Length: 163
Image 1 (tube, one colour):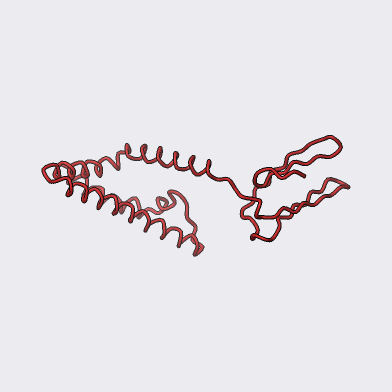
Image 2 (tube, rainbow, N blue to C red; image 1 turned 90 degrees about the vertical axis):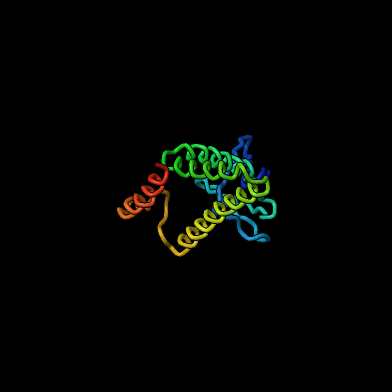
């Protein structure tokens, strides 16, 4: 057996080679070896690999997720429900045009901090609900009739303000 990158093995027997990739939900604790048992009819073999050597490489997945999030954010900013909010922010920027550079930067930093804090609060709340056993998913809230109906009021107020 030859240990290749994380969770990959190369097996050779009688001149034949097989590559094996094992995907795990979690690695065992450091110090406890990862045991893999293969059974083929009347043959069996077992491999033990120290977990210190099994270092997952998720950097490419992270950057793919980051790129997807950026693309999704750009697409969402073009949605009709976001356009009123963008116009409100644009009006706020034009009101600050006569002010100094410091006021403009402070206003932008306050806006960015507020948005980041709101989304972090939302994320922490959802993780807490998920850990408590609640069933969550994307868009599941829209299956309840009160949610889309309740969104109509605030949405109408924002649209009416722009008239």
